[in-house]
Image (cartoon, rainbow, N blue to C red; front, side, top):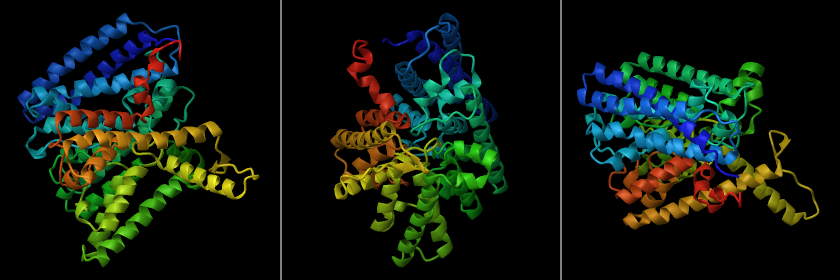
Length: 488
């Protein structure tokens, strides 16, 4: 079984058209703020995208052979790499970022909704460049391919198959008969969240530009800000609580919103993953509040609760915004933050990480293993939401968790060549694979990734994309079995 290159190239053409359209809002922002150099950089990148994309779609007609899983893996991986490579060009040619590898890192971080940055002075950049880097969060949050399918449903490439290779979480549920309708429905919710949060932030006194930039970072769970101090720039408790609420909402499985509309909110709370997600936020926040108050780190209870809730929500949803430097908190609080980096948000949300559903199933598998040791003759099934988990799904989840740990350790070994301390090294890989954003020590919430060498920046950039694509989709391309049709 060989790769259907006709479908692959046709999808790349579609991606180029979508990127061309995506550059338009940033170009308009450049015109509004009279940023001539930035405007030229967007035009210089935009027109080749339109031209080449149109040529590829017209040259490579829809194939009569339906795309297979291997085609989906290649399409998705190439699309995310291409989007990052092209998306970095305006930052580079405008002079906003002098080194292309730095620009690539920044936009990989944008599209993958990681939020890690190499910028040392964010506020010195043109408004249009800041808009573009945050807009990549919005595009990458729901998925570039899902966006493309909603925009161009007649492209002739298997939408459900391809998007399932891109969407975070164990599965992508169909919420409409046709996948293009599913994609549109998902983006309707996404647009609704975007519009409502923007309005609420405007009511909080933010400018339209700041409201939009921080909304992109919130609903996409990305974390890019237009300020060096991130959300701490806004001292208004109202603004911070609005962002907390929308981080929580966007860390929830988007399919549950459709269930809520059809069957009511009570049906939604039957979902085990959602209950654990909300419980984790509440319990960990409470533990950190107690730890910060008893250690004397905070004197004001209100500030302590708000900062704790913000950091916990930001990390578990892998948004990465910050209102406080958790790296100076007591060890117990920092340890809880570290564990939340591993956990991640719910499946089929815009968040990253391992995902709560996988953690939950893994714990159930461990409990099953212990029970079988005590009672070898018993038949013990693993259930989720009162339904038995199929063996292949349980195996797949266990494989993912082990592979996730393997990637983090292997990546950490490569990054250790920089010679930084152990916590900086491990957290840099963990935060990039999990699409979290900040880490600890030299890459804490008040620091950045500028001190890494080019080799490490490229490794971390690829890990961001791999993490966003659930690892297997990306790393599968490195297997000889993928390219050898006789072994497929």
